[in-house]
Every structure is written in structure tokens, then in C-alpha cells.
Image (cartoon, rainbow, N blue to C red; front, side):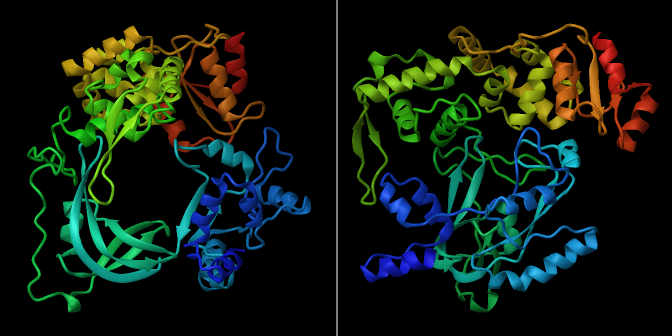
Length: 501
């Protein structure tokens, strides 16, 4: 279909589409349904999802999808050993080039759905699946320059500016160089001919230098010493690869980056604010930190004028917020006050505190005051909180500006305390539990939910402070050994039910 569409576009003098992935994404966003229909988009299914799957394994559920006449890739195979998996990988390294679509690798999944449930997910990916990537397509091009970007945490990322080159269906002009260590490792110089690949067929990266083509007058890269945005002297913490701009409150990309992090869907979910509007509000002095968002009103925003980014000719233009946009922003900000505490904590952008860590901190400390006043020793007692995270949290809450921000967020009505469930019991209050193994009457998530509903706390690792290890079949030997060593009480799911009664 992709080839057909491009043939038709060429016949009428239009530019061909770059690649199927981007073309599909663009098609799905189109407003003209007749064009969408003409492109004959289709899909292949790779899993069956539901509350009560009738099949015990992934392979059996895939076979059911085939019987129901859904599109399923005929290339899948159930393997009984790691050796069979490695044979499969080797077999498809060349065979995949004969497929009617582009591929970049293989996904290996645990077949037993019960084991999938036991293994669970991290915040971003399943623990029961892993990708094997084949060597990426490579291209040669010239390194013209290196520019530097500033992230919301102040981290500086060097970016290679390249002579445009076609790679895996798209034109590549830029590639990340990650940090000063990577520049040194690669030994790149300005004007070098470099090898470029796409990591996972998506993100361009420089993988090497063709020394034989190096210009005689080439000069090594001297990493910048000051921030490219605010000219503050950069710092580099011992043991870390990245350089940082310490001007947290005065560096524009850091300020805007923190706002973008704060409003994102997984944080405060303030949908109606975009980057240009945030920058405009910052430039006009209406907002300096997230607490200022909750002081905005409709009258201030309606008709507000601010300059937006420069165009290719270096000219900027004035944008005005219309009545509907202003009203949507105020409504979205008001709606964000209902976001739960763990998301508010994530939105603060404390270094090393991602979505999963924020949830664990919220469950352990219950409210933001307990967290802010916790000592270093109390912080590292929390589940999966190591020294690095504890030091970052302590540093964040010791800053007077951050204390003031928390005060204003509280006054604005944001949730700074864990919302107790309506059906909360108290039978397990004060007790901590680790769940391990496979259970007859409950799934692991059901057990965790049951404990939390009745006031208990679920942690992921066994320690001397743990109260109970709820043990099922095929329990991990390491957890059992630790529980025995620390004298932790080991109970069954039936014992847990008795405690609830």
C-alpha cells in the first residue's frame, strides 16, 4: 500500500512519503476522512487483552486471534528453550529482508500468561518481554558542527549537526552525542566523516569516525565551559557523565522545561497549555514557577499578547490568546487540582524521582509534610529509595524557594496527601507486606489491592523492618532466605484472609 501511494503521488507530481511509520502516524491525524480511507491502513495484532482470558498462554491466545480472522503475523513461533530462541533470531536475520515490511528486530515474550502477571511491569515496559535488535543500517556523512541543548534539569546534551543524509527512509540532519565522555570515546572532530545509525531504527546516533577521510587541518572538540543559553559556568558532579547548568531559576530552557514536565499527562495533565503559551507567560512575567499557574485568571489571559518563536528568516510574530483558549486554560488548571498526590509529587520534577518512585514515596510517607521533614535515614528506609535519590529529595526540600512553592500549591488546593480509599478497612494498618509467588485464589495485583484497601503497605523487597511475607507457589528463593534471616513472618493467602476477618 505504501508503494502504491507513492507511485500515485509521483504520477501527479507530489513528493513521495518518507516511510510507512511516519506516514501511518500522519494519516491517523488527518481531518479529511476520504484521504484516510484511500490509504487502506490495516493492522496486525500481537496480543489478546482482557479481564478474563480463556487461554493459559500467549501462543494459544494468538492462535485464537487467527481463528477469529484477525491479521496475525505468521512469523511467530513458540520456543521451548533459549537455544531455540537464538536459532530463531539467527534464522530471521536475513529472512526478514524478504518480508513485505521493514523490521528492526524480534520481541521475545514469556508464553505463560500467569507468569506474565507475576513478572508484571515497570513504569514503562513489561518485565516479561524483551527486544533483540538487529544491527542498524549505517550511513556516512560529514560532521559540520556541534550545538548544545539544555534540559529541564540543567543537563547539557551535545548535538551533532550533520550534512543531511538519507537513512532508513528519513533524512537525518542531527544526532545526539550524549555527553563529553562520548565525544572523547568517539574521537570526533569538526569536518570528520562519521558513521550514523538509527538506534532501534528511530533515534540517530554517531557510531564511529572514518579516520582515513579526516581533513589535515581538523581540530579536536573542546567541550563548552558555560551554558549556551545563560552563560553560567557549567558544573560536573564526580561520577556523572553529564555537565549541568546550575542556574536553575534563571536559565530559560530549564524554567520552560520544568513547566512542560509539570503540565504533562502523567503529571498534572493541564492539556490546554503548549510550549509557546508557556514561553509567552514566562516572557511576560506572569509565571516563574508552577505555583504561579494557580494565580492566573480568565481576565488576565483573555487577549494576552506575547511573541512566539522566530521563523526561518529569524523573525518573530505576536500571538494573542483568544477567549476560548483562555477559558480552556483556566478550566484545565482548575481540573488539575483533583490530580492525586503521587502525580503532584512526580510533577515537582525532583531529580531522580520518576513516576514509579513518586508513587512509592507517596505510599510510604502519606503526605508531603512527612516527606519534606524526613531525615536522610528515614528516606532510605522507604521502599527502593537509595542514597542518590534520598540526597536529591533532601536537597530539594531544603531549598527555601521549594518550600514556598509547596506552601502555595497547598493553598491553591492541590492534593498533597494520599487520598484514602472509600472502602478502606483498618485490619492491616501499620503492617508492611511483600508478595511473592503464584497464588490459587488471587492474582498478585489483586492481593496488593486487597492489602492497600485494608490499610496495609505493600513493598517490593524484604528487609528487617518488614512484617509479613505472603508466600505463594514458586516463590523466589532469595526472598525466602532473606525473610528467614531477618525473622520475618511468612504467611499464606489463607492466613492473610484470616487477618482481614
